[in-house]
Amino acid sequence: MLTKRPLGSTGLLAPPLCIGTSAIGSIPGIYGYEVDRDQALRTLRAVFDGPIRFLDTSNGYGGGESERRIGAVLREIGGVPADFLLSTKVDPDASGDFSGERVRASLAESMERLGMDHLPLVYLHDPERITFDQATAAGGPVEALVQAKEEGLVGHLGVAGGPVDLLRRFVNLGVFEAVITHNRFTLLDRSAEPLLDQCAEAGVAVLNAAPFGGGMLVKGPDTAPRYAYRMASDEVKQSAAGMWRACEQAGVPLAAAALQFSMRDPRIGTTVVGITRPERLAHTLELAALDIPDDLWAELDKLTPASGTWLR
Ligand SMILES: NC(=O)c1ccc[n+]([C@@H]2O[C@H](COP(=O)([O-])OP(=O)(O)OC[C@H]3O[C@@H](n4cnc5c(N)ncnc54)[C@H](OP(=O)(O)O)[C@@H]3O)[C@@H](O)[C@H]2O)c1
Picture 1: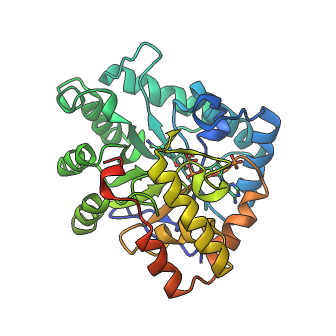
Picture 2: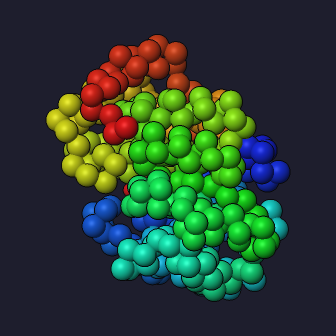
């Protein structure tokens, strides 16, 4: 199940699952709970020791705490293992500066925190924080990333963010070899469909992040009533509750269907799952391996919320 495959046209090999570390940086405003350093380090040690050899972070998660915690574990184990892929992202600074100069500083910070002198895969993170014109202007972040790649600081470039039409514009530039979309190709939202088709045609790798919508599709809508880091509409919560019941009747956890919904799509190279506890690793693999009957897929499809509720 974890066999590595080519990641788009990068020449890198990546497994179909990747561990995401935004919550590991402790962001209670988004996830609703703190994650203390000890728990984060135990989780990260288990990840580097475990079967899923791919980790995703960013300069900005938890104000840099995600990278700092990863760096602490990398120092314990003597650096990134040879068979392991670690990706990060460039972010604006606290003042909101997302210039080319800031991108250079973001790369330097990430390298220092992680103890790496080369970053194999770096994404432009959430470019919706500036306009497309600002992002692509001379002296802007896209130019700085391309330069960093030419200089060999960075191996491959990706773009990671929300709005689907914006990501599609970035893919059209032809400089990004990988795209992270999040919360937009799940049991509850299909808005990334056109992006998936575009990337498949262009040979650009798609990493589908947040298959659980940030928690709702694994913890259930009663425990986790937020979807994509904000309170979900009644329609979305009712849909998730209906899916929960349908899965219960079929004897399958909703989380298994949510994870496999992403993993079974041939346009998706890797599915990125966020965890903050070591025991989640084995559980993720169990969820990925469970048999899901065809009629349950058909039932879940019927329970998909109307397209008007999708994030886009
Ligand atoms: N713009 C971007 O680039 C972007 C945006 C969103 C996400 N991402 C990446 O994608 C990753 C995944 O997204 P996400 O973490 O927001 O959402 P997610 O993967 O949909 O859900 C994460 C949530 O699911 C819970 N969970 C995971 N496995 C579980 C299990 N086996 N049992 C019970 N609960 C489980 C986690 O709980 P615990 O914390 O309790 O383990 C956490 O609350 C991020 O960490 C990040 O690396 C990138």
